[in-house]
Amino acid sequence: MFKRDDCTTNGPPISRRNLLAAMSAFPLAGVLPVGATANESAKYPTSDEVLMGMGIEDVSVIDGIFRIITPGSMVTLGPDNVLQMRQRIGADRELLELSLDGHFAPWLLIEHTPFRCVLEGNGLRITIQGDSVLIFEPRQNMNLMFQGFFAPKYNKELRGNRLLLDEQGGCGFFSIPPRPTEFLDKEEPWSFLCHLARWDELWVCICPPRPEDPKRMSESISHDILYYLLKDKELTERYASRASLEEIARHCQILALHEEIWADAPPWVADPPGGWYDHPKPWETDRHEPVDRDAFVRMLDDAHQLGLKVVVYCSPYYSSAPDLIAEFSRVLNQYQLDGLYFDGWCPIRDDFRVGYQFMRQARALLGNRILYLHSSTDPFGSVEVYLPFVFTYADFCLRGESGRGEADLEPFLRYTISGRQISNSVGMWCYYGSTDEPGYQFVVPASAHIAAALQNHARLWRQSRMWSRFPDELARFDREYYGALEKH
Image 1: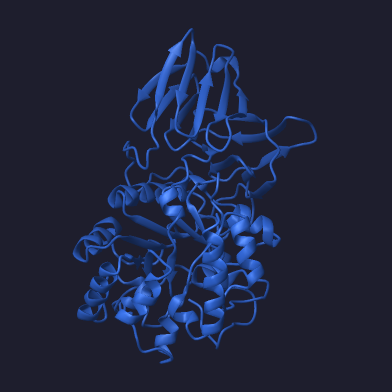
Image 2: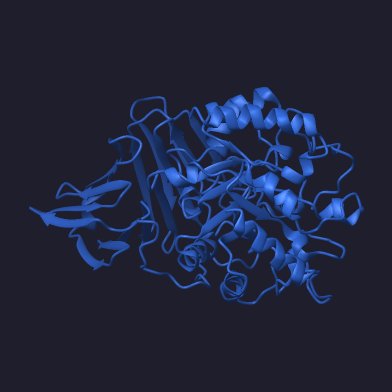
């Protein structure tokens, strides 16, 4: 958690999660920490539920050709043992091809559920999921060489994982455990080579897995972070007054409430590895209870009367609740909320499967309610390499708290912040952590940054109560941002 000092902080961007990422990142590709298991079972059970429309749309086997269609992809495997992967949203185009050795044949369709199909060969299993993820599970050592038929404008690698994107979509390769890989682009088509061992997994995602949601694209979020303003007694209104909510409702449809609404965590809670936080630290609580229940409920009633949807802070990353789904369900139902704000979704780890399954369970819990996700570096401790097939289960994805990495502003906004034709979650810019200046800058976005964000399909939050200390700048933001949004 940052410590506020007027409107800025000095030095490089740093946050609770950023500190932990720096301390736990693995130094070498293909090297696992001592004691880690290469193929550890997920603690959250897998599910075949179709979520957000991402399921198996059609399966056929004609003349020895398997064809599996999802909203975002079409996968075919014929007698020639060539696996073809086609993108269907953003562009209808052949994306990837994988020539498989003949010894894998014959292929059998051994499982078909609403969410997944499984093809089994002699030494290799391929699962095709409704969220346009293909999971390769070798039963022997092997090399897989994919060929790509688009020209990536965004090409980022970390510990063998690689994300390849252009304006229309793209793909990603993520192995469990990390393995050295090669990207060969001196000739066309380019190639991606991955060397796998028995019991490894290679996850290949086709982007985007679902269409954009016009309703979510049209909604604006008011999201203040008031913890330290309250702690330093620069602000006394923990729960927004009716007048404050009326001002927010003129511009926003969603009210996101941060950690300061909750009481302190109990004294026994432990910080994540590498963390050292003093009480009060409500982000680590095992049970989310308001500091002032009556004031909290009054604020919720006022917000709903004004037409605002309310989402509240819950952190899978920090919370000490033993059963996250049960605790988050309790909070949703007890206070009749419109959704949840997740501050992170997965501890820093290369085996992301438990976090992925948790995110699917969270989406199933929420149904059509809002999932607003903050994920600046999860799960790899990286700004630039991330998992679009996880972000797609969120309605909104907030990124940028941990800086821009090595990217210039335009590609950072287009491929790190924006989810357009990548996850198709609405990409939100966590502005204070990735302005032109070093450190955290708690200021109203500059005019040039507002224009750049919208040009690159990124959205900005409105920090309504924080920015009210700068009334002229807040008025400028409202004119420029919401005026431009009306034209998009």
